Image 1 (tube, rainbow over the protein chains, first blue to last red):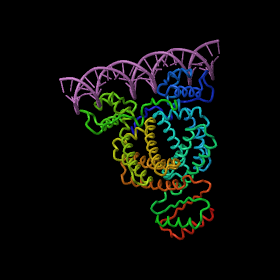
Image 2: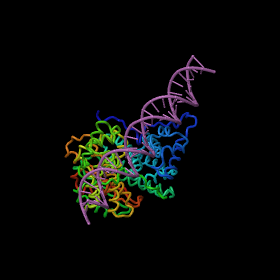
Image 3: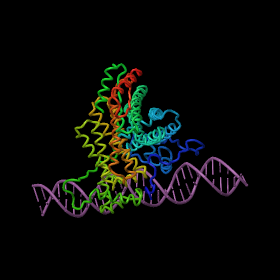
Image 4: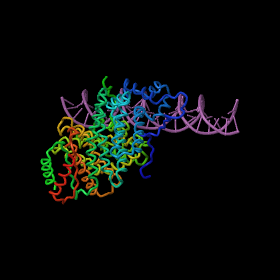
Length: 252
Length: 252
DNA sequence: CCTACCCTGGCACTGGATGCCATACACCGG
DNA sequence: CCGGTGTATGGCATCCAGTGCCAGGGTAGG
């Protein structure tokens, strides 16, 4: 009994199978229709006040089947988010790009997943804001992406002990993504182009810091020094060297 | 009805009051004793199998009072973690240090909180690993720190639009902290000095990247150049500046 | 002593979640 | 055409977390 029995059920990555492809049963209510019905009830009556019985009735199925297919009430709200994660994880694993770029593209994919489906993601955001438990769940989804990104970076960047920098970079990507995502969720009517521009800016910031991190990584900190200078394109070269010289002097 | 009624209960920051100071009731079981009893039952019988009735009996109180004081079964497991957060948040708010240093010290305080109380934090880690729901909860706590750090940095670093970089820096601090924390949780028998050495290394990495981020912040990205130099500690300063000068020339 | 207040415990109830079993439908070999 | 198998479903019973309500008992203050 090393870490205790795994009696728990599911939460985020529940093992409820969903046969979205292949030959289905006779008159099976589509997952999306169930989600939409649930979202409508949640926003109308509140999350707590909405019962699984009510959702089942609205979706034209039995309470029992609802539990079987989604696992829990929360899982209905996050069902499509779960699918998105699966998609993104598969994309990442198959990407031939440079690791950092692959992760940035994956983050782009996540944002795209939100923007594409405001009918679900926007009401969900409102619900998440109002209910701490749902917020926890949303945060857990975010952490899941972060863990996947971190693992991916650690694996691809060379195995030995790069987990710290991989973790930091992954956290930066997620934080930057969330920054842009939240700004859109607060005002979904905003022009999509502006959102994507913000996303590019954010990812540029991440790229710069990531390069710093990956350059520093695993060097003996006492022996090496690291200098990072960021300066406008037109800066006078001599002035720049003076300031760098001062910084180096002070550091040593 | 803008964001829906707040009918939710609590989750992380529940409003259950705890009168740890002042004159208490006659034979009130201390919070810590309840937590220890619960942790014991959780690890012995599993989290799901342990009922609130059982915990109440083990703690010498009624089921009803247990709910009143802790809010939920999960909240018992994370009660002391909640207290830690309160402490850290207060410390941060009162800190006169430079913002980045204050946040690093706050992270140190969190790690200290874990190391100081392995009797609770280690079994909790095992439980969290085995149960997705508890893992979500742990992640939510982490996110709470991150949000507090981010807000603190955005407020102190100058209000205007620094939220992106503040978010990225906060995420980095948290990621680095968690990296060290997890390594200890996996092997709590390890020498504390080694843990703190790792923590210092991790925070050094964060400090460097953070300086990058905070320097870049909000500059027009197309006009900026980034220079990263890694060099042995004893390098001749003039030679270094010559090479940097050459690199800059070539870049522009 | 009486009252106001607070903590506690008992009781009942809602509803999420699970296990068990019977049913209905599709597929498949005979 | 028919019986067997596998699967999704629905109904039913049950467990238990969580909440509201109310009564009991202790303390502080008048």
